[in-house]
Image (cartoon, rainbow, N blue to C red; front, side, top):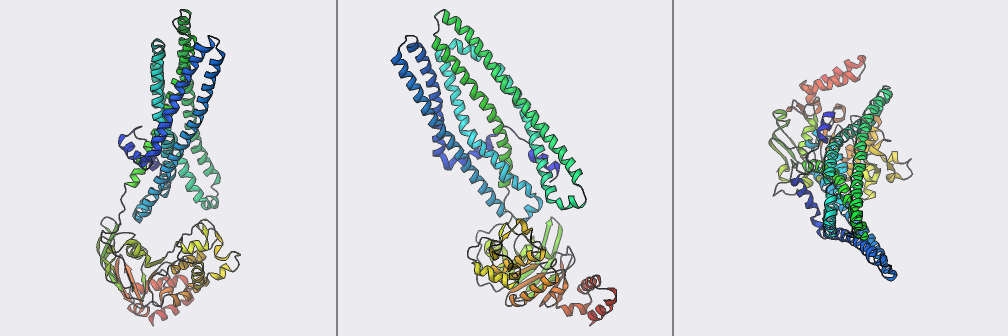
Amino acid sequence: MSAENYHQEEALGKAYDARLMKRLLTYLHPYKKQVALGVTLLLLASALQIAMVFLLKVGIDKYIASQDGPGLALIAGAFAAAILVGFFIEYAQLYLTTWLGQRVQDDLRMQIFRHVQNLHMGYFDRTPVGRIVTRLTNDVNALNEMFSSGVVTVIGDIFMLSLIVSAMLYLNWTLALITFAALPLLVGATLIFRAKVRDVYRIVRTKLAQLNAFMQEHITGMTIVQLFNREMPTFTKFDGINHDLRSAHFRSIYYYAFFFPAVEIIGAISAGLLLYYGGLKIYQSALTFGGLVAFLQLVEKFYRPIRDLSEKYNILQASMASSERIFKLLDTPPAITDQPEAMALSNVKGKIDFENVWFAYVENEWVLRDLSFSVNPGERVAIVGATGAGKTTVISLLFRFYEKQKGSIRIDGVDVAEVKINDLRSHLGLVLQDVFLFTGDFAGNVRLRNNDISDEAVRQALHRVGYDRFLQKEEKRIHTEVKERGATLSTGQKQLLSFARALAFNPQILILDEATSSIDTETEQLIQKALEELLKGRTSIIIAHRLSTIEKADKIIVLHHGQVREIGRHAELLKKRGIYFKLYEMQYKSQLPESKTETLEARTAS
């Protein structure tokens, strides 16, 4: 992803968006009882904090002043009990809000992943994988913090402030006004802090995104970095990006280091004024000593939720930005879905018909033009053509990875658009040129979490493609660990595993898309031997650049610029001396020594 895209990615919107917040709160609906309990616990904890202040006032004014030992013991016991009860309430409240955050995070992440799996291939063509991963990780984590430390606790902080203000006015409205006189300073410091932190937060997020992008790109391309000795220039570039990120973090630390001591200073000034004025009132017998101590306790508690709310602002801001990006992904509709009356295929024989099919990845830039051909049940058909002729596109349309713009594609006379997508693909098997292997073992990579495929079926599939010869030296056989993306396997081994995977699912129609293009001669012979047995009675489509792999095909379809130009068997097409002849001639001339070209020409002429 480009740096510009990442800047767009990390741009922050409003700190609070009522539309987004309303949608976010819908994720709490399944947990309404837990939310209500969490709010209740917070209210109880707040009320208990105020009650402890009044217990302190009563203990000083009524029992310490009168030297009433038994009464003081009673108050001390009540104070200790309040502390103990408060401990259990805060424990339960913290556990519950954290539980809520984790539950909502889990629900949201599952919803995103489910949605992503239903998006069509075109979305992944234009969307970087890193962006999707960020949605499922960083952005969901930001929302988890809001739900666990934001929504419920903000309600508690506001209620706590309301109780404290009410208690202060009740105890002594004059002292309360003196306390509130410092509020303009506090509000001013908060506004400055909020503006500065908002700017630096945007910079930190952008720099972090750039760092992640650089790391992902260069770790993935480490082979090239080392091959061309670019370690030091790469390190220098990384050091620059890392330095920018560190500087941005230092700026944020500076503002935090300024704001919180500023709040403490404002609180200290307020407390000093209270001590002076309260002391005069005690001297004039207009205020008790316990009342002043209680009021000072309330002032200390008054500033605590204000500091918390400043922290919650940052959480809220991050949540709004993350939720906007998440909902943008969730609001991306799947381009290919089942029709309302989609049907299931049964007793598939394997007849395939393309009739007047037109397709373009980009509007009006046609990849397939009025394409028509048929494949009969059990027939082995090859599709060939130069790069960009549309061979792989044909297969993508058959699987409905993309939707055609015109024409019809039918299996056994039924248009694929009228078939349930999952059912359609269950009857098709595909072996790709670029094989993707998952972390796990050989068995897992063959069955792909389909528990209907037993270990014995896995062994049979591997045996039929000749892969068991590679497993003989592995102690755990099919349960041998496969590293990430099959790092320890050769290209040929990966492709054999992909072939075994398709066989294990036993499709009625098997498609090989450049499946032998990167395989050595010995491995190719293994596959060719298996194909002779495995393709009997099964409709198969073979796409290959290596024309030697399709000489025995029942029918060869030659594509050129998205159109069918030639159809026939290998020998027939060579006799026509058309496009297929030229492809065959170019391939063999590039592979054989000059001394053997005459033999080739004689062979093609015959």
